[in-house]
Image 1 (cartoon, rainbow, N blue to C red):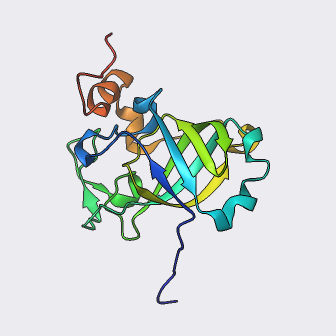
Image 2 (cartoon, helix red, strand yellow; image 1 turned 60 degrees about the vertical axis):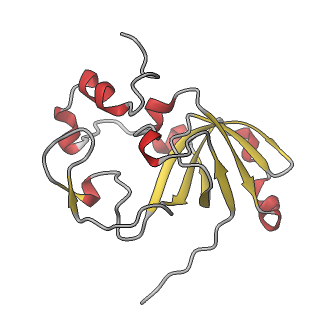
Image 3 (cartoon, rainbow, N blue to C red; image 1 turned 60 degrees about the horizontal axis):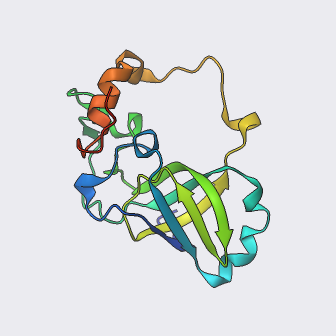
Length: 165
């Protein structure tokens, strides 16, 4: 296999117009609203999706111009392997985000907790299913050593919007 071709199924719209202003993860984007315009040829695939409160979005990091196999993630100043992070500088530029689905109207999905750049190509959608997606006895690797306070401090790029303690 030398290549895999993906076809976007829609476009994600958000208030995030600049890379440096995007919240680091959905948890730091609580309440931020956006929409997704699904291309008409994929409307039929939206059947029954409105029954789910949350969905995973798989998208293309279309503004990531570099690949790094080791980098310093936002929560640390130590080099980590790219596959032990969620950073965008991946070999295949594949992003994933869990968002709240509030409604669907005429091929447009209304979403919240958006940490994605405006006009990002959407590759796929999968429903969050509590029975399958919540795990017990989870290890989060090097992130287990990061305190919640430190994560919150580093997770908000726009400090004016950061919640007050």
